[in-house]
Image 1: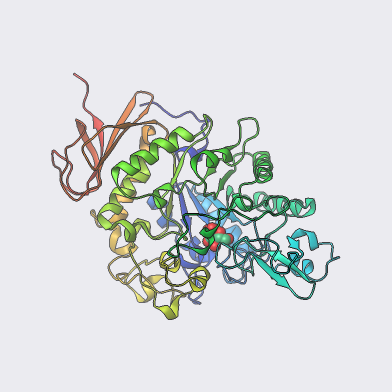
Image 2: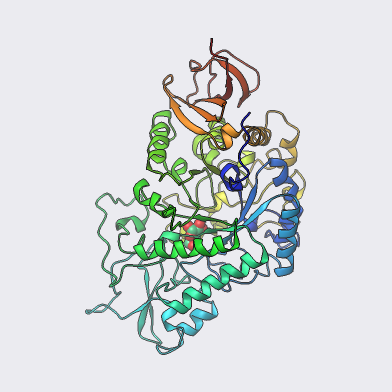
Amino acid sequence: MALPSPDIPWWRSGTVYQVYPRSFQDSDGDGVGDLAGIERRLDHIVALGVDAIWLSPIFPSPMADFGYDVADYCGVEPMFGDLAAFDRLLAAAHARGLKLLLDFVPNHSSDRHPWFVASRASRTNPKRDWYIWRDAAAGGGPPNNWISDFGGSAWEWDAATGQYYLHAFLKSQPDLNWRNPDLKRAMFDAMRFWFDRGVDGFRIDVLWHIVKADGFPDNPVNPAWHPGITERDRLIQQHSTDQPEAHAIAAEMRALADEYGGRLLIGEIFLPNDRHARWYGTPERAQVHLPFNFQLIENAWDAATLRATIAAYEASLPPHGWPNWVIGSHDAPRIAARIGEAQARVAAMLLLTLRGTPTLYQGDELGIGQVDIPPERVRDPQELRQPGIGIGRDRSRTPMPWDDSAFAGFSTVEPWLPLNADWRTRNVAAQDGDPSSMLTLYRRLLALRRARPALGLGDIALVEADRDVLAYERRYGGERLLVALNLSDEPRAMPFAGEVLLSTLAGRDDGLRPNEGVVLSPSPRP
Ligand code: GLC
């Protein structure tokens, strides 16, 4: 078997596991998860077989957007613990060989951040220009037509100083002005603060949003908009996102990360392939290592679509760009809710056998499916502002069910969001020793991926197969592995001859059973 070179960075063959701190483990009985809780549950993450944890924001925050509204970039939200608790968690993760990534939120802060409090105090405050302030339009009203991602105008009037400020998300999340050199320096200092403490990298929130076109022109109207989708999509975000200056800042962030050596930057970026690929930068002036690829979440779940998605994405990558795939997050519907549990097992195999760094989201390893949130328990500000179009994010943020004790072992009190209705049977303890559980499947897939460089690092070639079957080969050095996924609930022909190393189902069959995925080692060629 070809041994990977020691020069290959860990994150190429590694797997990232997203922890949503509010919902992982509560250790102090307030119904909300915390850092000490995460530390207590690290062994679950190690046993799963991932390489890195990415923590959604842990910084002081009024929690208007559950931590994505940061009031201090260099602190820890008291609800989650303190810097000492963070240092303990980091040391405990490192002691177990796990990397730890934080979530950097550069586009906006909380309106309670002291910078914004100063900025809105007067037009002449030295921090005025750290945010984006504009006069009303000539005839009155907002400076342009931009719409907040959470609905409504992206501009909020400030009566005290007689100007509007920009907010791409909630009005309590004012956008920072990255064209101001002092603000930029302060944000880079925040990155250094955490790098100096030893964090292994950042997931960077809405990176493609951070600079807006000079002159703030109106965004074009989207002809495809209809009332069933979010208000944001009324416009094409041509001038409010993906500006050349944002790429330049990403390159500076990367240079900073490279100064520290071995640190990883993942950018949250939603764009079509050609523009998405530009976020890798060039070999001479690299940007992020991994621009998050959400296409498995966004695209239809059928073999033809997936095949076309994989081919187009692979073809779009620059030669130095390493792919990555995401199948769940705190923003997206749960994969098992979207495609059903049987196909969620196939999805796990797809995610962990494709070429590229996979990111798993907590709870997907248990196959948590649809969780219905009663109206009185809805907490997601996006859902509260635009009810009825099915965009609620709470259903993916419910607490981890650890066992069948009270509150699923997550807390000693009623948690901030309800548990999955089937938590008494769908929990970590119940799935731990069960050979047919989703958890066992994830562990096996991750172990196989670790053991086989063809899966972790190899090339990929799509292979023709029966209708509804997605098939591909992975190769690294002399090692070759075959993957066949049946996306239908009927039997299909097996496209390969070989020995099955791992199936998503128990037992064996000559063909591909309904909803079955297999990894095979090819039979020697005659
Ligand atoms: C990102 C986060 C999301 C948040 C938004 C605004 O998309 O993932 O949860 O609401 O940015 O910060």
